[in-house]
Length: 354
Ligand code: 3AT
Ligand code: MG
Image 1 (cartoon, protein in one colour):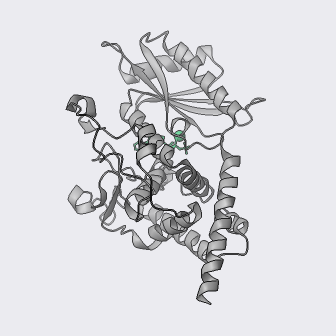
Image 2 (cartoon, rainbow, N blue to C red):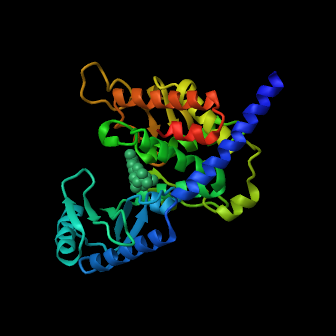
């Protein structure tokens, strides 16, 4: 009977892996969508240069890191290379006016937000059935770097890493636990949970720790630091693909099953901090405690995920007590569904994302 159980588990995992690949392929953005988005970026860049001639408009977030689903929003960052430049909030106001006059976008400038941005939306049109949503921020160089870091992780083992991440994005959106504004976790947070799991929890690891690999030649601190944060990581992916081969041969389904199991019962939410740079840390050692005393409106550190570069920043700071309760409940539910191994993997996926 033990052997039969093992065989059935293997069969289910193989089936599930195939279904996950098939599902994810259908959810990737089309080439047409990517081309339209690139045209939009170029158009916006041209317009911004009428205000700041020495500026560049770069994509970050999922459009740039390989973790994008069909119709995902565009995150854009404007970098200005000249010495004298307008403040971000002035730029937001001016750019807002300009785009309002010159384009068909609906424009919403937010000059007084913590990070000033211009929000844009474009109505659906033929060839663009879902329209476009886009945020333009300024000088957010750390976001460009963390985008590049996630992209490198995606490229080391695209089949397993991208499939896991994309499935979790779909799942978390369908289960309504992907809204930092409502007390749950951002996509960025989920991606970090996956990478933490693949680097630090799985043994043997599926991914190396790019931030702890020694550089090939010595680099001066000026080249590795940005705003006081160490942003160095091993980014020579061609070389890495030649040299680094994971001895972990688990299928994407086995990894996903284990991921849900780990975050439903093994991760210590009370005291643990997930850090992709340093592994499992303690809230206490980072001073990320006691901000959620009873009745306090400031609930900061229920769930702790260290940003890869801004190490004093908890990416999951928006997650409230109720939010975390819901997220953990969802991890348990997913774990339960997968453990019950319905006859067909497709049924499991449908149930998971119900
Ligand atoms: P979607 O496809 O939009 O769901 P995404 O991969 O674009 O997912 P987000 O929209 O959550 O991810 O984030 C876009 C980028 O913004 C990722 C990261 O560079 C930055 N970012 C987002 N949330 C945070 C955060 N809490 N802390 C620091 N940087 C963040
Ligand atoms: Mg995004």
